[in-house]
Image (cartoon, rainbow, N blue to C red; front, side, top):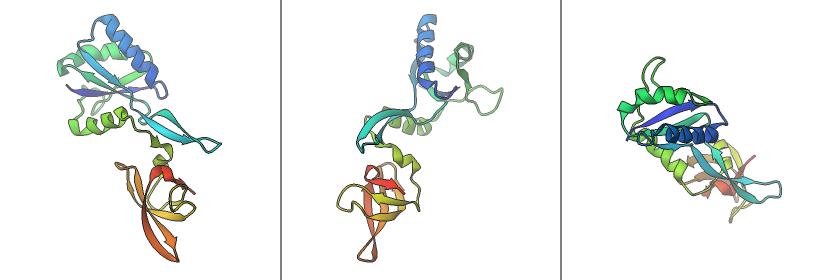
Length: 180
């Protein structure tokens, strides 16, 4: 079944998804819209006391993903969706054209990230190759180094630290480092 992207008012994604589901049920269109996904992930945040806590965060602000039973329902769904408060438009290749469904390669990583139960450290969004970081946990705790490679799929980074005056590569999890 095809997936479409809806542009919505940022920071209103959960409310809009709820409104869409209510409107679809009210109009009896549940057979047309099979799923509405808010792109959220679980992140670990460091509190001021140093403890880590989990929280949900939208990773694509201003967008919702809607699974439609068939492309033939889109002309009927466009006015319905536009009538819902805070829904702006279906994303399409250009203004005035009908929306295009996402390919499987485009939607698969988004859905896997949104449906993952694993919490990831919030700070990984801020990490870039070349950043200077401090290792906060593990056998290299207290060492400082620079990021040489990032592995987002494994939530790990290759950090070069100085051990006995010699640079040594260390592969470390995101939650074990902090940006300086």
